[in-house]
Image (cartoon, rainbow, N blue to C red; front, side, top):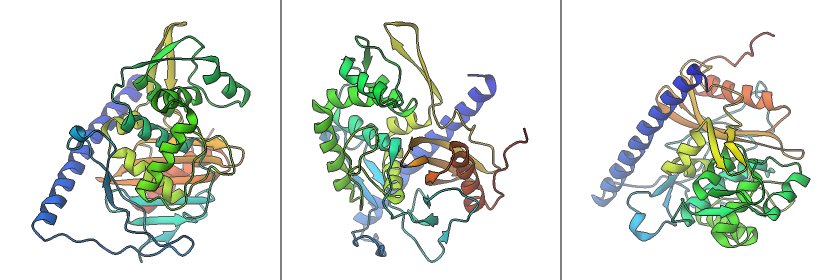
Amino acid sequence: MNKERERRAKFRRSRSCAAVLLLVLSISGALTASLSGCGGKESVPAVDIVPETEPLTAEATTQPEEQEEEQAAFFVYPERTDSSVKLGKEIDAKNAVLFNAETGQTVAYKDENVQIWPASLTKVMTLIVVVENVEDLSAKVTFTEDMIAPFIDADASRSGYEPGETATIEELLYGIILASGADSAKAAAVYTAGSEEAFVELMNKKAEEMGLRRTHFTNTTGLHDKQHYSTAADMGAILSYAMSIELCRKILMTEEYILPAEQHPDGIKIESTLFSRMYGDEMPGVLVEGGKTGYTDQSLHCVEAFADVNGTDYILVLCGSTTKWNAVYGTLSAFSVYCAGGKAYEPPAK
């Protein structure tokens, strides 16, 4: 990591710590107000293409009881208001949603409730389920041929482990998010639930607990399957949930990591698929702090990211961009134009 990227990374981490502290304080204030009889819930408008559901501002956790106070997950679901606007043609995406990460108020949208193929954005739910179901993240997993070979055949993204190498669960989590490693996702799933199929049941159970409106998983990686689907709005809610868990947020914000591996003397260096394409502070007033990318032939290019815009956190999900660079430029432009009142991103001249 060069000095400039290291400086940006340190600044991003410091902003994250402040955001987590503010989240904890806001939750504490909300609880106090509720106990004193001053709290209340706003009604949530129905979405005309999916069944109406209960308001999806939520506090939930599947952590052991003794851990609930120190890590209670909180998330918001994006909802349109009278001030929400349709995303402009300057953003290359078939489906998108941009919303306030604290209130859930949608700033801009484009067919955010229409079914999509989530590709590797799926792995954010994989991350959540592992963190919430594994008590000892230092436990080790040994890679088998079955955890690696199918993903070589499928030309899927991998962390780069070889059969016989070992990794801790925490190391697998970095592999899942930064490298978008299907091998890491499979190994973590088998350790957590005994098989990928059993793990997927946990993913769908979590989706149901969260009240997601149009999401169903069939695998841990996002490889294409007609029964593996979601929406931009549902994926935004999943990212919101992950942001409230300290370890998940930390991993989503990490730019690069070295995975210890027995057959790799220098370890396996992995780099965030998001931050390998942007610094995050290209636009005035905007700091993209973390996120995940995804791609399949069916989904096209996808990005979900969270950013601090002049002191307020926002979440963006873009799906169906025609190129990976358009997805990146669209991410920078959306935060700038719709949240900071700035200009669209212009790539430097070649």
